[in-house]
Amino acid sequence: MTIVDRNLWLAEAKPRHVTHLMKRLSEPERDEVPYDWQLRARDSQLPPEGDWRVWLILAGRGFGKTRAGAEWVRSVAEADPHARIALVAASLGEARSVMVEGESGILACSPPWRRPEFEPSLRRLTWPSGAQAMLFSAGEPEGLRGAQHSHAWCDEVAKWQNAGGRAIAAWDNLLLGLRLGENPRVLATTTPRAVALVRRILSEDGVERRGGRTEENGGNLPDRFLRAMRKTYAKTLLGRQELDGELIEDLPGALWTRALIEECREAEASVPALRVVVGVDPPASVGGDACGIVVAALGEDGVGRVLADASVAGASPERWAKAVARAARRWRADRVVAEANQGGAMVASVLRAADVMLPLRLVHASRGKAARAEPVAALYEVGRVRHAGVFAALEDELCGLVAGGPYQGPGRSPDRADALVWALTELMLGRSAEPRVLMT
Image (cartoon, rainbow, N blue to C red):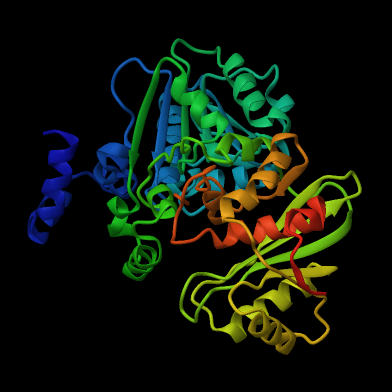
């Protein structure tokens, strides 16, 4: 009986048949049943057959990637007392909280009588078999230099920060140290994003790619969560990526590519700000498009930084105006720049009603969104803009802006992207880019 056949039989068997089967097992065998991953795993969560070096799981959120990684590490450690395993995450904190101590992590999925000892101060797991695993941060690639391993589990590789080439360097250092044992192997698990490292892994030899959708793990996820996700993100670019596990490629002629944005990313603002601006793209009507609200700063080094995406969808004028006011207060903005094409007096009045002291400038768009965005995209190309964090919805919209063509990203309109353009234009390009200022 294959694993699939056995799982189907267990799922469809009558309770009395399962009870009869359990009675035939010895007490140690019954104790093992709750921890038998082969009884619960889907095919897409089990290691592929054949001679592979890298097993890459690109799948939607909630698919069960973490559980698959933890169970694979456990199987390796229990079978090979000489195994030396690297556990690599975007940060040491995530390696510990997700890969080791998380609800689907290594400790949770291990039977108590074979659970490894975790020594946080040493960043080390030690199994009763003698196998060991060490925790590493992809943000500190030098930590992987010189270390030798037989296996590795790399979690959320698309999330690894690549500013200064750190993500690629961490991957390279890991592979160069993967030289213990007869068959060194790596499992990389991630929600797909077309970043440089994911592209690099897919281009290498010996890679087995697996994937799947969030709903494949529906039996272990709340129905309310699944319904909410589908209602909010169905048929959107973000939904295809985050729920369906699709790797969204760059559009021909796009002003921003995902690789470009990754090159312009840092974990947080690294330089004090000289000036902070909130860019606003108001919706044309109540219940229409989102209100784009993006906070950007000009640093002491002359580099613009995107600090926050505070956009709100389906909001009344009062609600989105309050969101603008909150963002301005939160980031101590020097100015709010709002597009006024859809009724300048109304935009001014609702913003003033939310905060009478709001430092406001209304601007009128005389060109299309893509044309306005081109000078801002050029700033990214020459390294004069950074993203202080990850802004997935905003970045999807940026990658949907095509030079000389219609918007091709998620949603009907790039509201977040337009707000970013207004903010960075104000900070770095001056009034000459959009000379029609209506009010100061």
